[in-house]
Amino acid sequence: METNVNYTIVGVFVIGLTLAIILGIVWLSAGLSFQQHNTFKVYMSEPVGGLNIDSPVEFNGVPVGTVDTIELNDKHPGIVRLLVKIISNTPVTKGTVAVLSSRGLTGITYLALRDTGTDPTPLTADPGEDYPVIKTEPSFYSRLEKAFNEITAELKKTSRSLNALFDPENREAFKQALANIRSISDTLVANDRQINAILQNTSKASQELQPLLQSGVNTLQQLGNATNNLNDITADVKQNPALLIRGRAQQALGPGEK
Image (cartoon, rainbow, N blue to C red):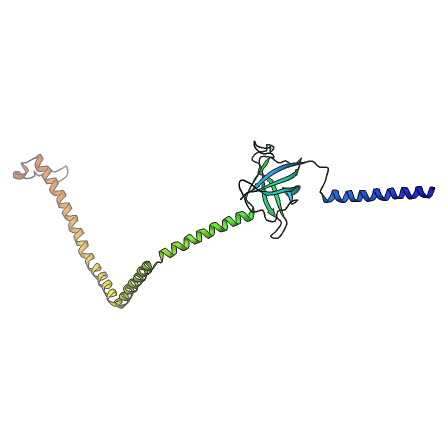
């Protein structure tokens, strides 16, 4: 009788241990935990390739939840709707934004949250939404692709402008202008001695003209002095017309003059 009781206890213990192990495996595989989670919605307007259900959600690099649902928007097929489960004590505010990120070029894709500091008000659901919606920002690869497309567009525009600038008519005009410049250059080289002789003669003529110019300046100065004297005489005659007949009276000698 005692042996049967021992076998029964051992059997119950083994069954209980097996059930506990199975329950633990199911618990861990399902990601169950005692932490409370809140559900948020994220609308992504870029491809979410590499992002899967149960992909991590991080806030400033700290794991705070997982992606629960990935589906297309019924009204806007170009937008992907995500439902994410985030630990309830995570400070998700109206200033929080979500960015699609990855660890390196071939790493795991995850959803990165960060706070912009623009509005610390806790995020709540808007009218018509069943869950609060976290705003998004373009990912690094999306910004890189946009910048590359803009550069490509500018290069195409520049290429078209260059093609228009160097069309056959402009190329012919440019060619003719170069030919004219070359012809002028050849002419200057061919007449180099004559040009030097002309410059030398011009220099000599300038030196010979300098005395004449100086004489002309002196003559103009004398003419100016004569004009001033004439003006003085005219003024005296106006004041005393008798000067034209009697002339100027000799001034009396001063003291000590002879």
